[in-house]
Length: 138
Figure 1 (cartoon, rainbow, N blue to C red):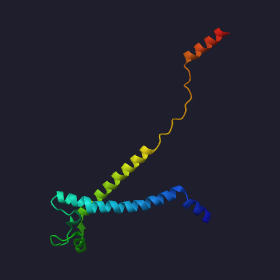
Figure 2: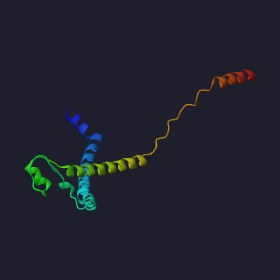
Figure 3: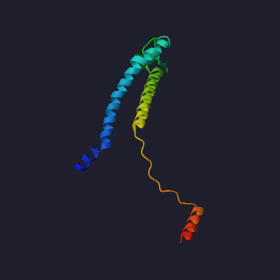
Figure 4: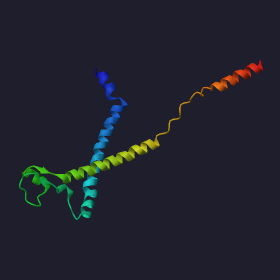
């Protein structure tokens, strides 16, 4: 049983998957920082200084105006649509980069040569003419 587990764990696909998960986690942190520290502040500046991470609707709780989302969430149920916008931007950036990576990988992949095909079967006319030629040669 231990040998079977070792064979399973050392298969190329399992190791590749583990490496992909680790790199994906690190890449996610990079994208998260890029969105939170670069993209969203630019969007906030364009929209007049709006901080998307603190945009929310109160769902019944009495919250003082200007309270941050984290503090408002402690007071009761909140609908944090600003966080949602940030996560959507994160997702779109990750999806775009993965699209570009897959596109580049497909471009680098060599085109497989076409499998050799047998010549097409001659038509009935060609067969008949071949028979006539062979008969005349005799």
